[in-house]
Each structure stands twice: as structure tokens, then as C-alpha cells.
Length: 108
Image (cartoon, rainbow, N blue to C red; front, side):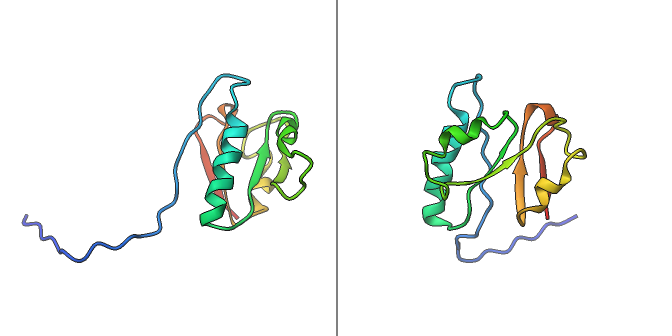
């Protein structure tokens, strides 16, 4: 089988950002994610959404500013089938948590 290739000028394409933040409990993963999201928001405006699986601990980063992020409490059980309504709040949400097993991406 012969393969053919086409060439053309290089153009920047919109690609989704994929990243993972890993660290021990209390190492600053949530704060780091918020700081990254705030930087991304300068280039790509939109809401910052925190799906909080840690007993409302993300709220300590609200800093008295209710517009910093949208907070979605996600209490146990953590399985995505137990609470699919969280993924329906926004057009596309990425949920990743150890208790979920594999990371899941939902579109509403």
C-alpha cells in the first residue's frame, strides 16, 4: 500500500490544553490549578469552574472574591454515575479524581 502526504503552510490550530497536577495532600494542587486557570483566562476568557471533591476545601481560595471561580460541591460518592448533573452545568467539564479511577471527560 502506497501512502501519500500533502504539504501546506503551517497554521496554528486551536487545541485543547491537557495537563495534570499531581502532588501529596496539602501540596498546593488546587491553588496551582486556580493560578493556571487565571492565566489561561487572560488568553481564553470564560468561567473558572472548581468541582470540589474535598469537603469544600477549595473555598479557602475564594479570597473574599465571589467572582474568582464558580464552586460546585461534589460530595461522596465520587463515581461519575452517582452525580452526572455536575457535568451538565457547563458545556464541557473535565473531572479528574483518584476516586473516579480513570479520568473522565463529560460534555453537557
